Length: 428
Image (cartoon, rainbow, N blue to C red; front, top):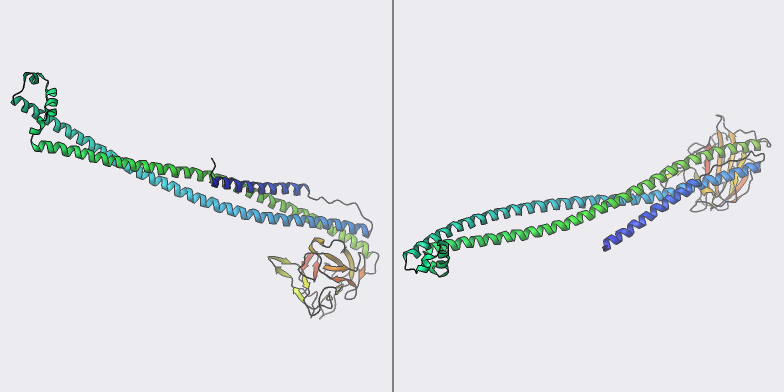
């Protein structure tokens, strides 16, 4: 019959196995859904825009899978840590039980040695009594033969005569010292037997305790084995998720390369039909190189850099004297709009957003800006914009936000840099 502890442990184990199985099923489905973006050649800005949108959705889906995997990895790690602690505690308990069994064995061996010694005493006392009794027999025979006995008694053998004399109370004529010696030996034998019986009882008790501890030890060893099996399974599931994340990151990099190619094609197509010469023209010193993107809101609510355990790859403009929501967003510099998302309110966390290509700077580096979380987009792909003048949208709170603001990024050759620290913008 299963004990309540075994039943509870069994249910807990079943829950863990179900969790591990769910992770493995998720892995299988996610791996089978890994994207392999393939697009035919496009001739129009609309086609390129559609390709860019599809690539963005696939990249967002991959990022969502990574986020899900990271949550599962975190949960699995918590379970791994918990089971490792249980294994350590169980092993310590096993060591304690083993030490107890060793102590029982030592005590049992000691009692057995004492019992053997008592038996030796008993054997010696019995032998002494036999000698004393033999002497008594001889004395009884002498006494009998010296007295007046019937012929029938004289015909008895010496042993029969001894029994007769003993039974007929003739022993009472023996010296008091003979009787006392025999009584003392018998009393000693009885005492030793009592002590031996007590030792045997103690030994039986120790054997019973040892058997109980041995049973507990066997149960603990079985539990340790079960815990280790679950621990290894959790570790394997966590490792598979980590491997999947590595593969997803590789797929993301491929998508980023494809997106860059599409953006380059879109840029070339746009610049071919516009007056924009494809060069980034910074504002003259001592001004920052670009215009401030939200002229009405002169405040930063979150700078570029470390934030919440990760890196914030832009600046958030909000919390000034003027409420940010609905304020105009202007192009930070001359350029061409190369990407617009005004249909997907999540937008991979960016919400409604716009990307503008400002061309190559004097060092041959491509300069791109991004404007995220807009409430409304007021520009279109291929549109030529003028820095500080062209309104491209309105500040909002779409996507992954905690309140209305503009998330503004500057990218140099695809790398997001600190817009203020690198001197591209400044609200002062």
